[in-house]
Amino acid sequence: MKNTISKIMMALLAVALTFAALPATSAFAADENPPVVANEKLEEAWARLLKVYDRTGKAFADPEAHIAKFQSMIDKAADSGKDVSNLQSALDAYETALLAAKPQYDAIGSTINTHAGFDADGKVTDAQQAQATLKEVRTQMKVVKDAMGGSFKALSEAIKAFRDANKPEQSKDD
Image (cartoon, rainbow, N blue to C red):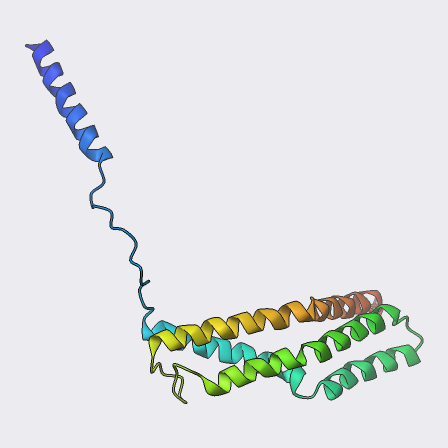
């Protein structure tokens, strides 16, 4: 009897393992038309892109004034006898990249101003056009980023290194 029960249990266990290995749902072939992203997601993505564009635009709005601000800080440090050679070379590279990338940045502005697939309030009017616009703006932003070549990050790191190297000494009374 004991042997029969173990055989039945082993058979049931084998059947259970077989069913566990089979998928619970059937697989469907990929549709030729990918699913359309929900309008809310497109609107959120559009709003994020606009924020990035606006934040980036502060440097591109008036590049000469932007560079002059950094230059005046470097000149002030040089006048006080500090070594600013790394800062100056980082600023020069940043200025060159900024001026070279400005036309690409302006192209992003043209795409944003036409805002195909979105209305003036950022609401989706045509989901497929909206997706295409988002993709185009992202591509254009990547071109700007590549044109900048990490020069802003290099300038930021040079400023940080300069500050670390020129920290005012703390007195022992502090």
